[in-house]
Length: 491
Ligand SMILES: *[C@@H]1O[C@H](CO)[C@@H](O)[C@H](O)[C@H]1NC(C)=O
Ligand SMILES: *[C@@H]1O[C@H](CO)[C@@H](O)[C@H](O)[C@H]1NC(C)=O
Ligand SMILES: *[C@@H]1O[C@H](CO)[C@@H](O)[C@H](O)[C@H]1NC(C)=O
Image 1 (tube, rainbow, N blue to C red):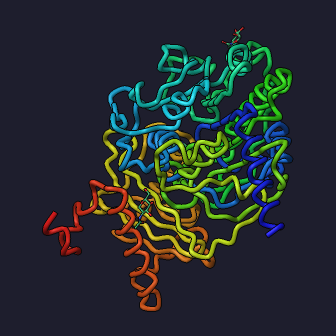
Image 2: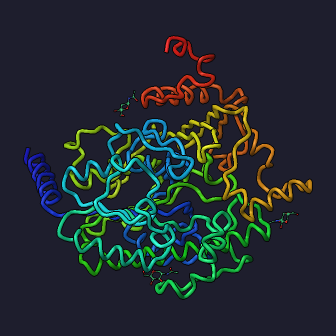
Image 3: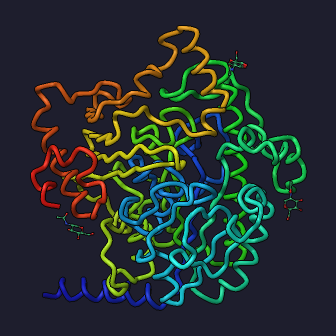
């Protein structure tokens, strides 16, 4: 009895402390950022600020976006529900014009209702505005240059300072949408040399006062298994590293603003990325090369697990409940999210025997219709390519990139074996792909027709179907479900 009493007293005191203390969240989002970080054992790229943040963080080794495309990923991040359910089926900007459904409840609408001051600096890329409200906003959607609010780290620093003037008097949520290390110059020549390669063109040198470009040699870079080891690809990666180092410097500047304002100690800090890197098999793919993202969660004062690694299988849809939990609003907010709060993990590792996460991709650019649904457990991944009769679409900025042009050129010249798959197989995918992630982490050996895996395949198909049903997937019976599921006949 005594033990129970003190247990409840402790809970009560923690609860009291949590609700009476002004607690804040700083959400740092990289744009197409991958594992090119010191903390993830890349020994070449210099990321001292993110590495320092990792010293206070739980480091996630198995975090995945639920969709590997910018706007859909951000919409899922802010709504806590998958692309097919929140309505952001593709990119938000320009002719693509996708938007979430008006009925969706989002993180910032919940926070606003609870008098938490919300801010966004940098890339927003989601809408409509009333579904994704922020009190303080400097983004491409407030008609500012994305380069200035998303890549000019001096500007980002000054905007953070401005935000904190008001926010320090309240509880706050600050979202920094870095545009680095997204590709830039190839698709936007009008931006001039600010934007060359990955945005490290000459004009930026010296005119972003807080930025000293770090230049890398192509021969030094680490080439991931899904990128061909050629000079063109190495040069592309070296440019990517320079941009990552700028992102890292930006992270340092933002953290310093919070430190001098004396709000760091009550602030939960999350660093992640919207999707995989912009290379073939990266962004827009649901292979791990496109879906796995870095994730650091730091709670400077309260976390028991600093600089520890977790292999907990995590989807980024878990972040909304995590953040809401941090503000103590999980029970009172009135919304039931499919994800789980990750806060308990900061104290103690949880066993995860039946772990499964789900993915839902529909388009990227408006022309790139390629719906996929997938499920991943620790051991297996099953991908359902609903539009498998079409070739896998290639997005514009990837297409014009030196590394993709290099892939095309070599393929045209009849070269083989310079890449870990062939472009032909990359473009033409079967309806179902089943991979054993333990023995085949590169996802090249499709086990769908291997008799030994029949039961595993069936179990995963059933789980995927139930998840689609439960999350009101408009694609549930489309286009082939009608042939496979009797239930679809009556829908
Ligand atoms: C970056 O922002 C700072 C501060 O607003 C400004 O002085 C500088 O000119 C900007 N740099 C570029 C390259 O636009
Ligand atoms: C359906 O999703 C809700 C949350 O959106 C969850 O509470 C419920 O357990 C799910 N049901 C099934 C059968 O998966
Ligand atoms: C690919 O081939 C085209 C045409 O021959 C050439 O202009 C281009 O420089 C090549 N690109 C790469 C990255 O090899």
